[in-house]
Length: 85
Length: 262
Image (cartoon, rainbow over the protein chains, first blue to last red):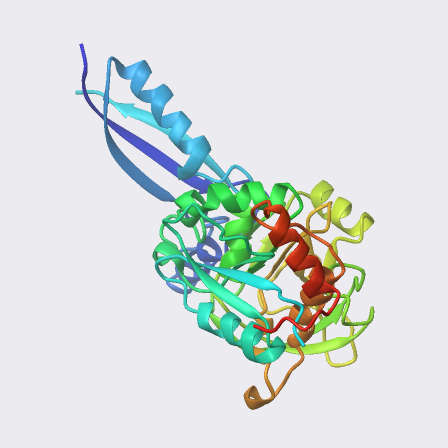
């Protein structure tokens, strides 16, 4: 039966793509005395409410959206998580 | 005397360099230009499509990502893929990359700053329909105005661009050297503009239209539009709509200089 699923998409800069925002956060943390932060990568979280026939259908549909619009595979990776409950 | 070239300038919500391009074409060249609304699906028979600078859809999600799915983009993509002369400036370059008409992507400037100033550019390939008015090695001063202009791509993509002479413009220092200091945004290999394999689509971050009239203090950028004019006059590219026979005859007369003025 169709219901609305809450789906999180986490988009992060791909490995090897320079992330100046993450690097700036890393330096700021260093200035605050947080030693040992070797890397910071800054991405974005996109939360969708998706109507679908099941968790798998919600995931499949969201992955299609990621491929087409939400992420740019040339520069970004994404992870889709269908939240339970 | 005019060639009768008609340039279509796409307007997305948030485009803000559309009028500058209009002036470059109408005042700089004396040719005609028309605005194409993003919701339209008619390219109105234009010879050249320009995707101007700006912040289409507020740069939400990624610069150019939403504009790429505007109704008019279906027509623009068909036009570009079938050889139509297509120019993407700044935000327009971002849209072309998002539409996969050009390889690579444009990400946040390395130093995180919005950079708005003249840059030095070297013409790397004067054999394109966008640069034929220049000579290879020419040094230009043209403004940039962007926060997300760092060109990135796979090493294999960059190598292919170089090998096929598709890097058309590079950021350089005063004497023409592509130094790191002359690179305003951290672009791979100082790349400022590239063309597709067929050579009919150019994307560049600098704004040639902003230096296209003497009243603006510099006309280094006018050559891009003069090159397009020469390409259209020479029959390069295609009209966005197949013209009916009598219109084709008329256009041929105009190209031959039959005294048609706009």
